[in-house]
Amino acid sequence: QVVLVETGGGPVQVGGSLTLSCAASTRTLVMAWFRQAPGLGREIVARVARNTGITDHADSVKGRFTVSRINTDHSFVLQMTSVKPEDTAVYYCAAGSRWSTSWADYPYWGRGTQVTVSS
Image (tube, rainbow, N blue to C red; front, top):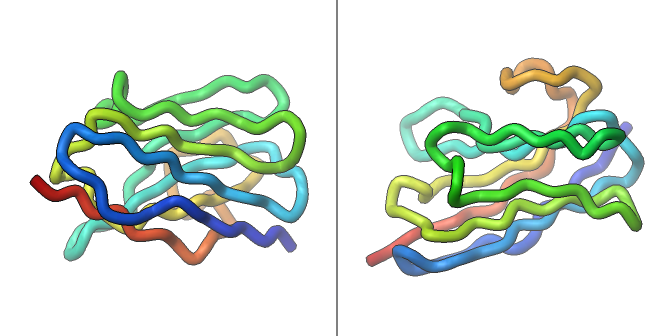
């Protein structure tokens, strides 16, 4: 069982920055951030491979968001810059063993943290 806890959400103004953190209780092969806006499905934002550090970002956030692992523990972070109103969503961290963009392939989830972008 892997326990994930997100921190760092909250309100932010358009064009601003915010950093989300996810603390994991144990090491997992792949860690990812997903988000879900009201009335929409859960979409992947970014993922990172724990062993290699390889990352992948959704086109909608490429160049603005950066996912990275914390080598000293099992945590990883999502640095959000130049945020837009459409980034408003509940952000979830997830963990699993498959290099996948599908939420169904991640068995472990945090409870989510709200990010609200306002002008």
